[in-house]
Length: 313
Image 1 (tube, rainbow, N blue to C red):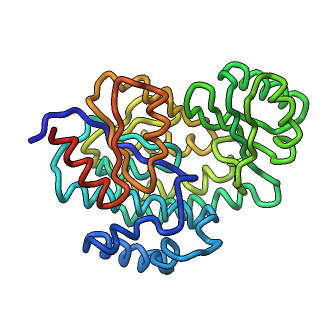
Image 2 (image 1 turned 90 degrees about the vertical axis):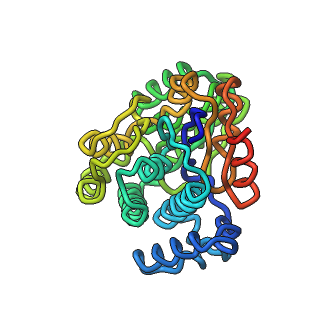
């Protein structure tokens, strides 16, 4: 048994790209089987969604299951070659659902259906609202929070949504409100204020109606079979029961993602973090959040082999 202390981590929406998971599919029967079963479960072809140019990959009800499936494939192939157990699991936004799979509390097929529903409910909540999100670079948390509060007092709909790292926060709300304030943010010291290509406003009050719709599916699919704890995006603290998962994953829709807080709080317990899924978004963030603990990633067969080598060093 390998004695290194590791965390398994999973990225969320925005990490997708055409062709993700293809190397796994071409080189692993595990990937082929998981893609076939997920396609059967949801009634559409994941090979087409993942590997071919399509507008669907940018639609949240398809993006979410696509990202989760590739993350779970990376995890399963890794587990077939390495028996290391994580100290805890952590995901960024949607990635918390991949983390639940890694914890043992939900089957990946149930999770694929769950996040497909989640995407549909998010779309429904934001339909016709002109929702959007904006990345702010160069402002501290307190400044963004204060500005968002004063802007809401003036009737605008803007909330802090993702705390990615110091100096990088994503805000969510009505896209027209966000766009109208780009210069205001820059005058306050933002180096960049970038409206993201999103049709929903995640982690804010615009998604209130989605919470009640999601909860029955959480109740149906999440179990109490936690093999390891999950770090909550809402609290930056661990949980390991079904009741906590239902409560926190509902709140996650309307609460900001405390990703950097989670990494800072738990990094001292680790030798390394391993990111599973397409690309290496969290690996890049982690380099800037905490410099004492390395992050390695499993995004294709080559990175899998490199990760296994580093674990065994």
